[in-house]
Image (cartoon, rainbow, N blue to C red; front, side):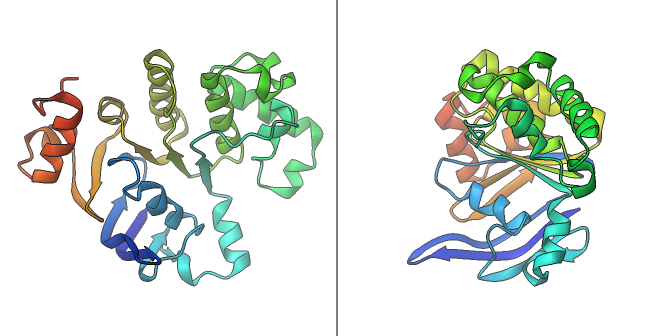
Length: 250
């Protein structure tokens, strides 16, 4: 389980998070919605210790992230896969080498036969041909690069997956492919996921629950139907921005 309690974070004079409470139960996918620049990426980076709160606490599997030592944090991070917004692939490395970097167990990472099998398994899980392993990021489409980024994130067999805007910059067809992949991985791998997005339709598809971050706080957490029926002004404004009437259909 992931739990953020009363998180406060500011950068200089800019208050980004002001008393945020946020939790994700084992085996579920929570879609974290909000306008661009509201602090969604800042929030999820607290989960794997890339950012520490000014006050408040963050728990993963009952461990307080801000209070872990370097070795303990490194060990916990082997259970947390992170999908970066723009893929963050290394252009000078092949797809095989990029995915291999996600194998977090040092003994396994040094076993060439294991790495080859694991890379092929991950390519299959993200619906990419096995010969993609020999290509380089520059040879791939945007949608394929996103899927390679996901393959790298799952290579270490994590318990948790954090997706930072996984469909950003993609056309609707490729965005739908990534959304379907997120649902598939939750079902097949049993991972617990947080999906940062500003795409309402996609979030409603992939999220067991939806959280809206606005005005430095989580304004509402609930199902898609609960968001549709909410009378919270920030929720209504966010939905109406994309849909006019604020009524979102499946």
